Image (cartoon, rainbow, N blue to C red; front, side, top):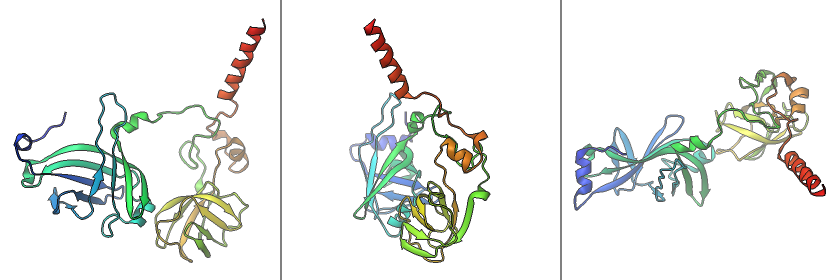
Amino acid sequence: MRIISPQLEAHFEGGLTTLATCWKITREDTTELGFTDHDQSLTIDSVDYDSLAGFTPTTVENKSNMSVDNLDIEGQVFPSKITEEDLLAGLYDYAEIEIFIVNYEDLTQGKLVVKRGRLGEVTLNSQMFQAEVRGLTQHLSQTIGDVFSPSCRAILGDSKCKVALAGFTVSGTVSEVVNNQTFKATVLTEAAGWYTGGEVEWTSGNNDGRKIEVKEFASTQAVLALPMGKSIQVGDGFDIIAGCDKTRETCQSKFSNIINFRGEPDVPGTDKLLTTAGTLDKTNRNE
């Protein structure tokens, strides 16, 4: 049940309405951005809602069976608001979004909140972006607690893993830029694959403060999982952490941390169970 003011309720019940839909995005760096489908900008609760960079939402679908709500929004990249570089850099990942309706002729009547959630996957195509909005019930579909798995469930360096990352972190500067996804650094002298699956955090340059996973590493060259949102330049500073492939062998030989290994590689998997069941069934038929 949604609670609205008596004045706004009376406006909805009237024969003529003056309604506008607004979207407020709050990024994890606390930056707030407002947009509206009204033909003029609005100011609500000290937030400016820009009419020049509005969104087009799909139909909001809410169900009573606790399944995840369905909503996508799309809009155009706008230089002073949402930029392609910021989207690619991940600044909008998991940003909070609130969608609501107001009477633009009388904003004192309050608002009707239609949807709250977080932004999920964002895709770009010809200066247009599309993002899925994940409702609050999305959290109910996620696994909570530990489950059996052949690979380690801990994250390198967290409270379960307990590896001291300082001993596996190297600081350096870019010595050569191959493209915006690949760079070289003479300080990276480790064997091929040492940083594969690891993480780079930029400490200076256009991408200062941003983190990204390492896809491949060999011969002083690191290939990132995705191109950086802003250009990489020679001299950019970074910290790079060794990669972990979550296997028992790597935990023992690379990190000497087998005591904190959080996987069960010796537990029979689905293939083993099906093989056993098939063998028993065949034996029973022969009897």
